[in-house]
Image (cartoon, rainbow, N blue to C red; front, side, top):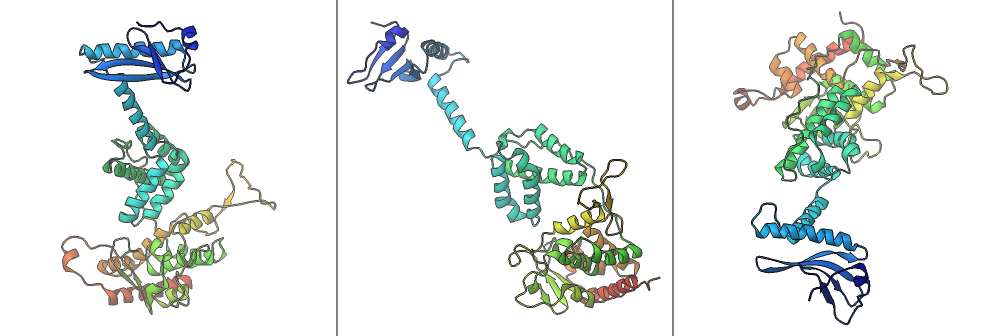
Length: 422
């Protein structure tokens, strides 16, 4: 005989040595445990299999709420038995939702995705992985770090990149977007995400090919003003060494004593951008800038905090240049001064127009071309990859020609610095 469950009826149910149940017609009931715990349930069958759906403990779950959940579950079972698409097994549905919650709990956050991308992809396949790590930790982690990677939508990416553009850094916005897009593509490739939120998004700013070349007057001005700029001695020497050797800023700042043998500096394949070993002739000026070298020296431009472990970060060069071109003017108390237009007052301590460390490399190449050096020799000095058939058949390294060209450039540079260049 079925019961009719009421609050009074349920309150009067006393625990026994063994658990027992009281049920209404239709499978709605309550189970009383020996401990005194009382649990609402729905007992039903699907495909001949007995199902027991827990509807919550009394009194935390009220009778009216348990009955409401029972009615919803019973309707789904009835529709399922009649072959209706709306029908379902409520117990299986609950298990599915539980699995979904567990899967979401285990889903990676953006911080975790950044870490995996750097460790498993960028470090293995990108020489510029440190740049990826720096940008992701500066732009992505503070904004999205605790969010699930699967929750990042196209609009989130657009707003993040537009914010970088709005703060006056269009080039950084492009770089950041390209790295973010690569990271999400990795996530799709590894089946971490079903799709990338970067699909259909274009670069936020047009790419601008740089063509900045310093003239002779600017070279002399920069060389002399570096001595009075607010820049460490290591960075001053590194900037000058770029102008003397025409090598990439990152390769110069990462110079290690073990790479230097007399007048030759060998940039190993693992540090070379184009994955080709590069031999650079070191002129007298270059050796003076490098200073004495011994086997225990380590990095020529060591990081001040981890001298034996790493060199100065390559970005320190660009940062130092940028800061000194727009150095804040302050009062005697160190407070920022402002112009009539409300813009912070600055002074150009380098006394030349805006440039980047890489522009120094382009400057050397341009001067060498003006001096009549062959394109093949200039490309060899710059360590540019050969193109086409010559890439396969011409394995000559141009060491003699590179030495002659760099010595000629040193003479020209010295004439510029001593004002004898006409």
